[in-house]
Image (cartoon, rainbow, N blue to C red; front, side):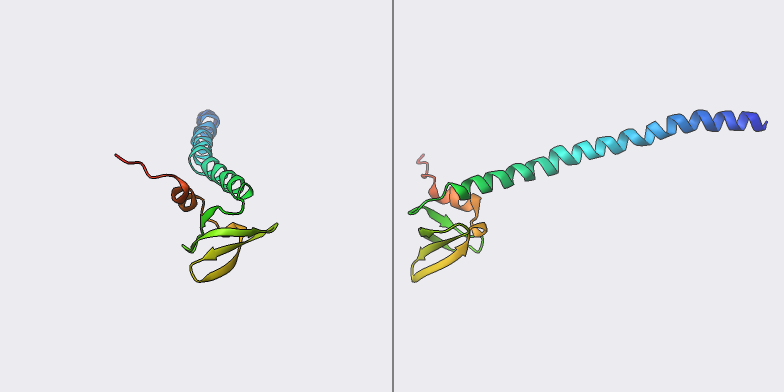
Length: 108
């Protein structure tokens, strides 16, 4: 009787370990393709956009401030706003809002 219990435990244990491993691998794959990969792509697009900025470009900061770039440094830029000038860090640029500001409006 004890031999039968050991045989059942051994057979179920081998299949059970693969049975729990496969869902864990699938969860990791889903997280990678639906959460990690898009975030990395968005970060690359943000960095590329910031690196391509030049004087005269209209930008929107993450705080919602609209302005035009009048000076660029390595890590900062000077923005001309309605009442003066403000210096911001390059990471303060909102990629989505700035692209929406610079794309022409479609007339229907």
